[in-house]
Length: 258
Length: 251
Image (cartoon, rainbow over all chains, first blue to last red; front, side, top):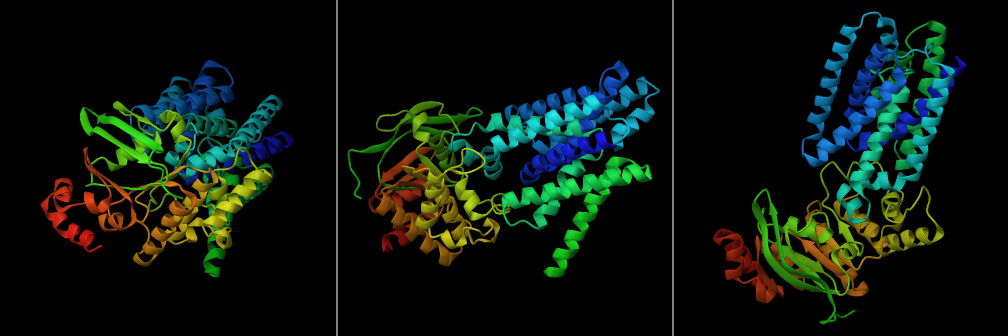
């Protein structure tokens, strides 16, 4: 439980940091797409007997680079590309799963999250990667802010927009890969998006939005993991249900105030 | 600050731009002097936005060159302040305050240095946005939001301001005030202003030099002598010129 709690808090910290930039750039679908792509890595790794976490990391990084390349160099529509990667990766996962019977229980934990499967080494890797992602976001905060505000304006002010788009998407890929065991591939998108949307309802400034999103994410993950442990339910489901509860409560409170 | 006739700020020579085998701009040459107030007009699809994107360094010309007095185009870009169009949902729904948007030009890390803070405070004062600095930009009027974008640009101490259709999201009463503000920046700080506009009446009233672009540079010079009925007819076709040139000559 302690290992899961540490890993969960790391994931809860990173998810809304990335999620805020994805949501304001209207790329919320990106998180879901990368999460589905991660299933290819997990299925492939389970089939070939190597670390599912590593498989997910490789698959999401390659997909994020592929999506950015196709978007920029071939002028394809962003949303259609995400649909292409999402459905394509689901198809590949289905084929890989059907090729190998016997890892259904493992796969369930990667789909919906499980606190029992996380090892000490994995917690260390998750912590290390979470620190790297957080450091990159803080270091490049002004660049990501300006690119999200207006890409042309950022370019005119000397920011290499393509490079930082690739960096942001790579960070999103890492965030998805480290989240998959705690929250699950099908629910990581929700943890990136729901706390941010909740924070948007209370926004007073960009930094305030980030801080509220972090608070909602940490609260949802802590209580979700606690509930998951004592009620023996899927951790990802519990975390996302609590995040959804925060969003609905915020809507109702804002509705009453307005 | 007066315009120095020798002090050429931007010099465009034989500029052409081709996209998918189609020429968008052909053989365009003009000079812009430091402190000038320039309007770019022309019909939709005539290449105004392409010309601006080339000046901004967002597109590269297929042929021709852009130079300033002593530096190449790459350096020119770093002296430009750009005011993008206010898209309906994009910038308006961005969850940031006035101060955060203005600060974004100065920031080199998570926080601002004292020097950067002073530049931001000064830009807010110059644009009259100090009292609204903690407001979300989504709560501002179109004119106020344009001032925020100008304040953002001023933090970078630009020599040239390029504005793309700046009054599209401003109501009629706010337009006059906004143009007065631009004229004040141009006059008091000597910043060169290049403004793309559909509104040829306003361009005729405000700017000191007009560039009429429709694939080629149809005409250019001071509005009164340049925007003649014949020139506007060449630029827009008969129907449009008949409506607009009367307004220009009343002015």
